[in-house]
Image (tube, rainbow, N blue to C red):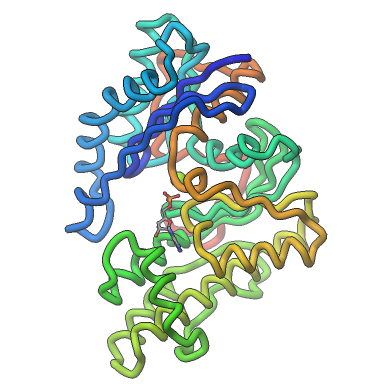
Length: 344
Ligand code: AMP
Ligand code: MG
């Protein structure tokens, strides 16, 4: 049995956790930065990096105290090394390196997306490779075939915005505030999902990818026209996202076959209608559906510690000169999506 300290700081959540290879979560601590970023309607990278630098060390100390452990008890230190906002990633990775060096423990540089991808195995010991993963967060929208630790096939990605980003922008346009996802979902309950005609970008396209930028522009136009109730725009927007995710997932299954399990991860997995749709698609294709608990879907350090535990068990550790990677695809062999902007 090994004990891993996990560190996460790639976006606007500072987090530290202690997780064992036996799937025991001894501590997980998280400090959000919503108040710092709320006035700007989105995450400001410089503010995020400073906030991580202030809070991370005491948070790690608090996690160790809660678990009743010291650094001597830890077998390895796993820190997110990308992808993400580079200032924040560097704070977490350098902290991880310093602790590894001081305590004489191995460093594991974790790809944040691998943290999301493996997190369902932390709570579901029966979840065997391979499985299909719908990763829908504020920064990513991908369908992956998870074939093993460090082995991922990207079946689809977004050529522009992520799904969560589209929720956040819609919330901003409708004046609902930040973070937008939960507010749009709540507001959409009072609206009619069929009221506003909105596009379903790339639906039925022969290429498997996602696109949400045109949907956002259509939301702006619908709002500016003054012809629609904002709750109808919210409901119609959410329905458009559900339809896009469904179509692209069905295409991926058609092109690449199904797996025993369909898994969802990322903050957008909190969305009720999206979860319901995924469960239905899984059912229609003879797959079991696994949705990790909400706290494990959004950014956290338990998933980084767990990815560290999986890598440690596979003998994968990293040297102290590992360089933080703001961009770091899980599947380096995946071709750039045609028409993709910088985020592909
Ligand atoms: P993450 O990037 O994984 O930390 O997830 C954050 C993203 O998830 C943000 O873009 C949120 O707007 C989005 N999100 C959170 N809750 C919901 C929800 N209920 N519906 C849609 N999006 C959500
Ligand atoms: Mg994330």
